[in-house]
Image (tube, rainbow, N blue to C red):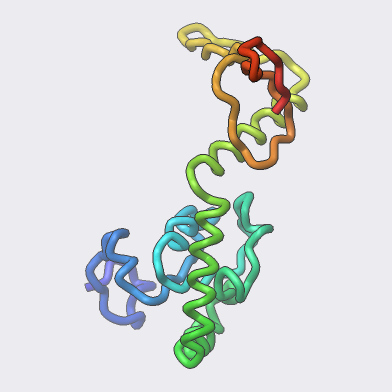
Length: 178
């Protein structure tokens, strides 16, 4: 039974698959909707080979991904998907390595701390470009600001510097720029 007339002739509807059950499959296809497919980092987290649709949409980490190293690229209209799947099936060793590379890319770049650091950098840069002072509307709560004494972000590349207090070998306070 189809819900939309466009579905006629597309084959039989299949039961919905739980996201956790995705990882039981050898291949994953990442297809955009009205925005970039936000599930891509999660797909990289499994052992599956990811086929990523070419797209005008992007996320901040796309520029660091390498086609045929981290994922298999597929045309935006998916017209070469079958051909790419057949390649993967006939090149199993290479396909498994690409899947492992994608998984490692996720571990190296897309863990929660990495996403947090990306947003911290983004908002810091955005704040630097803001020309008007923010207005706190009635009923809104002002967020407490960092006093500089909290643990520093451990982002691997910090575009801003933050002073923190540390003790040197003699137990005296010293300031260190991170």
